[in-house]
Structure formats: C-alpha cells, structure tokens
Length: 257
Length: 257
Image 1: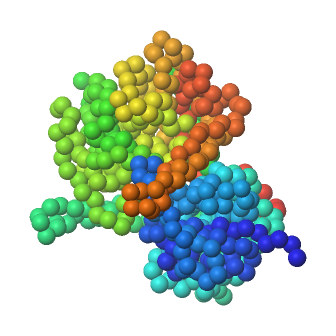
Image 2: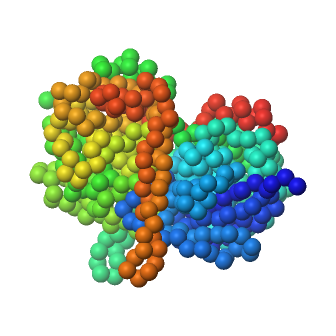
C-alpha cells in the first residue's frame, strides 16, 4: 500500500468551528491528518503573524483519532508552527485551510485568515488550498461540499499545484444538484464599500463597527464573483508575488528616477 | 495659490513612533496633512481588519498643528476609517504609510501593516506609498531619509501612480551620501526561515517565540533585496490583484475540470 499523504489542516474560524471539523472528516479519507488551528476566531486577520507576544500551543483531543493542536496565534502562525516546530523534518504533502464560514472571493483574499494559511504554505513551497463556503452562518450546512472538496484535493495531490501558488476555492451556498461545475478564475475587481456604524457605550463613549457591502465593478465572465453568482465553484490561483510587473516599465518611463 | 493636496498619513508602529513623526514633518512641507494611525504597535498585522470587535477612535494632539486621530484598530482599519468616516466626502490625494522601523522587502510585504495601509488605499483607488527604513531600532535615525521621501512623494503627486498599485519603498540604513539612487524593482523570491524559541513561564507552562532569519533565494539584479544590498532605494509597485494569471492555463490544461 502506498504511503498516505501527510495533510495539514488549519483555518481561521478556530479549531471548534463546524467548517474545520467537516474538512478534517474529508481529509481523513485521503491521508494522514494533522491539525494546527487557532484557539479562537481569526476571521479578517489577513496575513498577520505574532511577533510582539509569545505563542501558546496545546494538544487537542477535539477530533476523533486525529493529532491536533490549538494555537494562540493567527492562521499564518499555525502553518509556521506546523512546518518548523511540530512536523519539523517531515514532508507535508498538502495544506488545506477552512472550510471558511463565508465567501473569500475577490479582494477578500487579502483580509482572509483562511487564505493566509494557504499563502503561507505556498511561501514554504508546500502545495495548498483554502476552501470557503459562501455562507457566513456559524451553523452553515457543509454536507454538500464533501464530494467537490474530495475531488479538488485528489486532483491537487495527483496533478499538482503550480509552484508558489495557493488555490482559493469558493463554493456557492447551493444544493449539490444546483452546482454546475468548477471554473478556474481570476480575482474579480471588486471591493467592500465600508459604512461605520457609530454607537455609544453605557459609559457615554463612542465606538464604531466596521460594516459594509461588497461591490463588484468587474463585468468579466472569467472572475470568481461571476462563477459564484452563476452557481459554479471558483478556483483562483493566488500568487504571493504581489509585484505589479506591468507597472515597472510605466514607472521607469513616467518618473524621473 | 493652487490648493494643497490632502495627504493621509498612517503607519503600523503606532502613532507615537519616531517614524510617523518624521513622515508627518516631511508631508507638512507638501500638503494638508491628516493622520489616522493605530494607538499601539501593529507590526506584522498584515492586511488584518477588525470585524469581531468595535473600533475606538480618538482625536490626538500629538503632532504640532496637524489634525490627527488614534485608532484601536489595524493599519487597514485606519485607512477605511479615514476614507469612509473622518474624511468622508473629501478627495484624498495621497496616502503615505510609515516610516516603518525595519525592512519590508520581498515577502515581508504580506506581513507588513505599513504596506497594508498602502494596499488598502490602492483598493480604494487612492494613490499610496509605504515607506520603510531598513533599521528595526525603536530610536532609528530618519534624518537622511527626508530628501528622498520628499522627492518620491512629489513625483507621485506630479506623475501619478498606476491605478491599483501601491508603492513599497525601502530605504537602506546608510548615510545620505552612501545611497546611490532609486531603482524600480520586483519583489525578490525570498522568505523568512523560522525558528521557534521554546521557553517556560514562571508557572511551568511552555510558550514559543516566533523568530528566524531572512533567506534570499533570488539571484536577480532587478529585485528589492538586490537594490537594498547595493545601497539603492527600492520601489516595488504592489498589485492587490493576487491572481497568478499564468497558472490559470496550467490548471485548465493539467487538471480535469
């Protein structure tokens, strides 16, 4: 029997969330699973790392017959800890992150802790996938995602992921029958249009809640937003090289350097 | 007399840091300055935003004759608050972030709160620059950076920054005379090689410090790391579209979608 692949599972909603539990159950069908996940919700943490405080790391018995650790840090910290401390010396075959409770399409990739775990893995040259379900509910229904996630994960292990790329997979909040298929997409040009909700606490002090609406400016039919709106699963290959290469010549031409 | 440009200043080292004070003094020579900066150090916060807690925002008198606010949130929060709350309805001509106490070359752009303020501005279609001095000292000497920062900022206002791009400017820790000039660069392929320093607290509990060394794998002479090592100021145009466009066709060819 060939050796089972070593799969690291992390997320940003925290180790007790329903989404990571569902992902662990899927991955147990494919490989040897190790979980390193935050001990508290880390949504919106982007690619934050913990450098001003020490990290706490404890073994967890939360998953049935799976080695798991909960960590006081961010999703990116969890991947660093797994790679350079917990699994030091072992080859991790794949990192999967999620399943996120909520969409991570378009610019949300920048704010997403789920995707930062995947991007951190890409930096470490470990193939990685972030999975998100476009349903923000704490008690979201994940059962219809299993076969799609299983298929995408098997393809990643069999056919590989281009070097330096993390896959950003978003799954529509639809029944299995209503999902039309999978599209490889680009990140849509869209943004969050913020509104700050100002309130007063019981002591008379003002505070603000960050809120807002997602606004898509992109009419393309090759984007992740289009795919989700049209009942497809979107896969965006995310590159951690953020250089705007086309802008190098523009700046060299237009600026007096 | 033409109207002065409206310049928003933020950072990640916090509103009391030496770097932001230096940047404010430079920007006062060019425009109307408004500061919105974190009330505590936010290094390594990446593109984190605050969604689980409300934000606190207070006026600050820390800068001489400059309107300033300190915020309980992250650098990205500060830009959102400035654009959609404090300066709502006004056109911000430029966002500058920094001066960071320490390098933000290569992949550090992903972990950098300084750069997340600049990238958030680019998402909002506001031209932006993050400035970093390659000196981590809390009491770093910034005086030699003034003329370079003044020149780069004036060029950004005069010649513009390509749409959707934030500039990542790193300045070597050298005397003014030793700095050879400015190079437009790409992000070097490099990473942090982590080491976890495990210790025991006075109560017998283990904790870990994230530490490590920066390792450059990139031999190119067009990178930000090369520029800094060769006494040039590096400017990387940073694109918030993280799609690895070249990988779309690879995945379509090699995967069974």
